[in-house]
Amino acid sequence: MDREKLIRQVKDEYARLARLGSQSHFIDQTTSPAAAYYEKALQAAINGITAGKFDDCITGKQVVERIANSPQKPTELS
Image: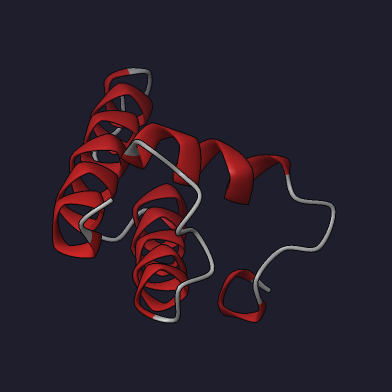
């Protein structure tokens, strides 16, 4: 898998999740905790992809799911 392509897919997936999360909120906040979480999660995913941690993943969605289901969250998300 091309790492740049995987990064693009991960960015798209986190953007989709962020949109879904913001649609469920009626109050608009300029800096929501959810947006900050997705930004940190995206950076953790990009760092992992760049380091080759997700070379066995075929899609960006697989990377996002692996991070979300990991018992040990990346330090960026702590």
